[in-house]
Amino acid sequence: MDGWVEVFKAGTNTDSQGRTRTWTKADLDKMVSSYNPADFEAPIVIGHPKGDNAPAYGWVDGLKRVGEVLLAKFKQVTPEFSKWVQDGHYKKRSVRIHQDGTLGHVAFLGAAPPAIAGLKDIQFSADIEANDYDYSEGVNSMDARLKQLEDELKTVKDENAKLVTERNDFKSKAEKGEADFSAAQKQAKKADIVSFVDQGIKDGKILPAWKEKGLVDFMAALDEQGGDYEFSAGKKESPGDWFRTFISDFAAHPLFKEMVNPKKEDDKKSADFAADEKLAEEMVSYVMPTK
Image (tube, rainbow, N blue to C red):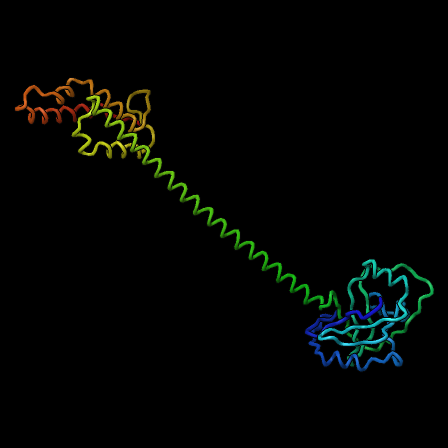
C-alpha cells in the first residue's frame, strides 16, 4: 500500500444513486488543495459504510492530480488489510465526495472482511450529503464497461463480416466448380457420341449423311433430357440409350442395306425418298413410350 494509488478520474461519471456529473481537472485540483489531514482525515474503508462505527483500515495522507487522474497516498494501513489488497480481494476502489467537492473517504470494494479486533473506529456525520463514485483499473467503472461492450460488439461484427465473406467465397467457388463439372461432363458425353457415330459410319451402321445433318447434336439433346422411359414392356431406358439400340438394330434391317447399296444409281433419288418414308414408319413403330 506504499506509494500513490489511483482512486478517481475526471470525466462524466455516474454515482451509486444513478446521478451523472462531469468532473473536470479543475474539480480535482480543488479536491487536492482543499484536503488537509490536520482538519479532516479521510479514512480507508471497505464498501461505503452508512453507520457511525465502521472501522477504518488506514487513512488518506495526501492527494495529487496527474493528468486526469486523482491519486491518494495512504498511511497507517493495517497489515491485515494491506494483505487482503495484495492478495487480490479488493481490487476496485471507490471514493465518496461531499457536496462541496471535498473527499469523504476512499472505499475498497470486495467481499466482506473478517472480524478484526483493535481497529480504530471512525465517526460519520449523518447529515452530510455525499456521492459515491466507483473507480476500477484507472477509469470510471461504467465507462469501462461501456467501452468493453462496444469493443465486444465490434469484434462480433468483424467476425460476422468475415464469416459472410468466407461463405460467399465458398458459394462462388462451389457454383463455379459445379458449372465446370457440368460442362466437362457434357463435353465428355458429346465426345462419346461422336465416337459412337464415327464408329457406326466405319462399321457401315450409320450413314455419313446422318452425321452431316446433325445426328451428333440430336443424340446429345436426347442425353440432356435425362430420366428413364418404358419404351417396351418391362424395360426402362433413357432416350439416348434407346436411340443407340435403335441405330444398332436398324443397321441389320433390309431397308437400311438397301439405303446403303441402292441397285442402280438412277434409282438413288427414288430409293432415298422411299427409304425416308419407310424409316419414318419404322421409327414410329419403335418409339411408343408408355412411361
